[in-house]
Image (tube, rainbow, N blue to C red; front, side):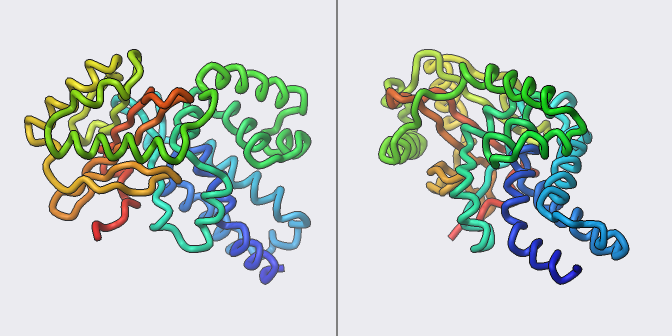
Length: 294
């Protein structure tokens, strides 16, 4: 049985990590949760005999650990200083076996931020059902609820996400165009040309976690966003090497200073090709997986 579970672990580690990441918003935490789940079981050799279906068993363990982690001080949104943004994921820093899972699951940053609109229970039901296609009887068993309650949770989650889901994602050509324009503006200090790329009511979200100075509240409107970037550029906050990088399966930007990543910038648009959200992550705890500057 131990050999079978070891094989299951190697074959499903990436899938379970993707599941935990969707629930916690932290890839570092997700990796730890999956590893700890399997270590705890291997250390309890007697318990291995009772596992007849490893898939449901380990999904339940990972989901429960993930939900517990959300309530912990380090991941609690309620006690977090300022805006809480998901940890960005860099495909090139993952093991080769992880990359197909990341691409297949399409863990886009826009989708991860949308999940923040949900309660932990709604998030769990939505992710299990919509992202992983788990049947309601298993979801009910995982959460300790009946199927009817799980269906209601999913219905509430869909209603919450409905208004914030983009009508259609921007094309692969549009996103690099935004990134290129932003990169040029940061290098020249001329942000005015970016104005027309933003929606009038675009929003910028910053996450410094209280460890790095950042805007505590969202910055709303394209003019205020442009003024913010122009201002910090003039003050020298954008000094360093700004490098286009694949983040959560989409092109974004990483600012390196003395070889160390200090900012991650991600841009989200709508079906019209305009920028609606821009995300700035500077909390060093969320930049652990940023690849080294080449």
